Length: 199
Image (cartoon, rainbow, N blue to C red; front, side, top):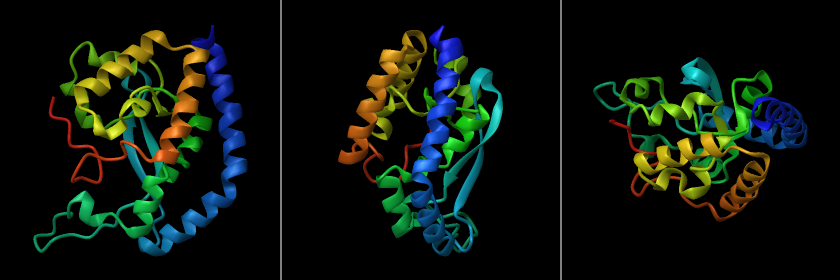
């Protein structure tokens, strides 16, 4: 009952409430990133959702588009702007995804939506992470986020799919709040983001 109906209702209500409450922060961060990223405060990218259906995720743009002498994008760590680093460390870059939750592309809690090119690389067990909507935060995020291995992350994702409940979601919400304040697991050592998944 909760997974099929109540979760979506709660997602919509809480996402709408969150957008209203966080609107001042949304505006301030948007203005800051507008100037830091040459008029591009938002980042849009295709991600697989429930049943691997693609949707366009919305995030604050924390990295610029600077390229090297050969015309290739520089590393994530080198492109991360000062304000972008702050936005990422405080998890403010996730705020625009509340719009994805309102649209029904995502849930507040679930496995994080990854890149489409990873889809052929998953094992049959790992593919189970797409049986529910992806989330802004999830069991893997409160148990290591980007500081754990891909294998461990997928194990957490699949475990959540099978154990999803109201009480578990409330626990994840509380753990997420704690993680945001202590800034744990935001990136892997020496990198601005998680390393590329290679299967």
